[in-house]
Length: 463
Image (cartoon, rainbow, N blue to C red; front, side, top):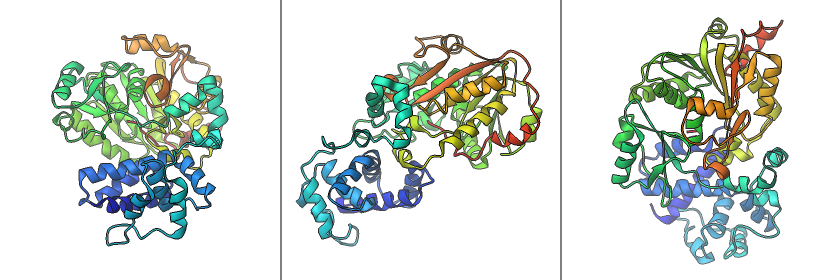
C-alpha cells in the first residue's frame, strides 16, 4: 500500500469504530482486516498502530481540534495525528491527501488551517486541562483519585502506555525455561514475567510480535494472556481432583490456566451465557490438550443448573463483567463509551452473590475484575459479605502463598490490586473469600435475581 492508502484505511477504520460504539475497537479492527486480505502484514501493523495512536490520544487531539474550531471526527483526528503525533510538516501531510483512487480526497481549506495550526507542535500543551492531558473521563476521575492518591497522575499515565505481549506457558506441555530458551533462539525479545511463575513477556518495540504463527502457539504450548490475568487464575488455587466452576468464563483464558494447574485432573465447568464465546473456547482447549473442562451455556435468568449446583464446588471463580478501566491501555476507546456504573455494580453484586452459593463449606470464591474502581471491587465484595456472613475474606498474602507459593505477594490486606504503573500488568482486582458454612437460603423473591449469573453487561476477557 502507498502511504496515502494507509491514511485512507486509517480513516475508514476509525469511522467503523465510531459507528460500532458498542463493540470494542480490537474486534472492529479484526473484522475490518479479515475482510481485506490484500492488506499485507506490514501495512496491517502500520494501520493498526495509527488507529490505536488516535484512540489513545483522543482527548488531546480533540482539544486541539476545538482550539482551531474544527469538528472532531475520524478524518480530522487522523489529520491532527499526522502533525501532532507523527511530526509531519504541512507539505508532507498535503502529499498524503492526493485525491487519487486509493488515497484520501484533497484537504479542504479548514483542514489546511488545522495543519498550519498544529504542524511542529507537540501533542501536550501547557494550557490543556489536566483531565484532558491525562485522557481521563470526568465520570471516573474522583474514584481514581480516591484509590491512588498521590500516584493518581502516574497511574493514569501508565494506562496510556502500549501494553506488552504476555504469554502463559501451558504447564501440561512444557516448563517455562525451555519455552523461553526457544523463543530467544527464534529471535523474540523475551524475558520471564516478574510476578507470574508461568509467564513470559515479549517487548513490542518495533511492532507487536507475531505469536500466533509460531509452532509453540499452534501446538498449544503457549497462550497470550496478560500477567495480571495469569495471577488471578492462579490465585483460585485449583488443584488436581477439585471441583471448580468458572462463572463468566468467556473464551476460556482463565479456565485454561486453571485446568493446567489441576493437571487435567478433576472437573472444571466453564460457564457463560454466550454460546459463541464457549464455542471459541473449544478450539483453545483442544490445542492446549485440556480434557477436564466442561463448557456449559447457562441461561441469563433462573438457570436450573446454577440452582442445582449449590454447595458443590471447591473453587468458584467469578470473573465479573465490568467497566474495564484496568484494560484501557489495550482498549483505549473504552474510556469514552457511556457507562451506567450503578447498573454495572448492581449486576456484579448479584453475580457474586449467586455464584458464591456454588461454593461448599471450606470452599473458596475468587472475585476478579479488570476494573480499578472501588465501586466495582471492594464495595461489591463488602455488600455480598454483609448479605452472606459465612463468607470470610482470606488475607491475600495467605492466598498467594497457598496458591502460588513463589515470589513476594504484591498485595497486602484482603485484596490484590494490580496496575500498569506499579506492576506492569493490566489493572486487576482480586479478592478471595472462603465459605465457613452452608449458603443461606434465598430470601423471598431472590430467585428472580438469578438473571445475575451471566448478565447482559458486556462480558470481558483480558488476555
